[in-house]
Image (cartoon, rainbow, N blue to C red):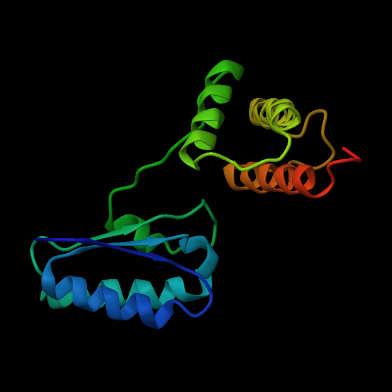
Length: 173
């Protein structure tokens, strides 16, 4: 059967991605290149490879290439124009955003913390802060000196820091 090959792009992943692209194009597998925004300098090479593959027409008919990326003005337009675009937007309102962020936490699995009561309270505070920042986006920079896109990866890192602090500094917290 067909399979999905996932490659998280980052430093040193270009040759792995190229080999996987060519293999999947021949076998009819699907390939997902995740975090394309982390390798913008390589996107022009990917654009050439995709153009060449489309012009040759030697691809398996079931071959699919999926790209995931954060929005970036330097992302090659030709890649965007060749495919179907799917975007995700955060839900509107505090409650739906809180539900989404708690769903993200539950997807990550159970967190090992030596102070579960304090962890639960700090997690709620962090989630509340996160959704307030998400809701503030509609006001642009009004009330803030510098606009900043506080996203899910920022939340996850903050959550990890809270957990580490609670585990390592039990008496002080």
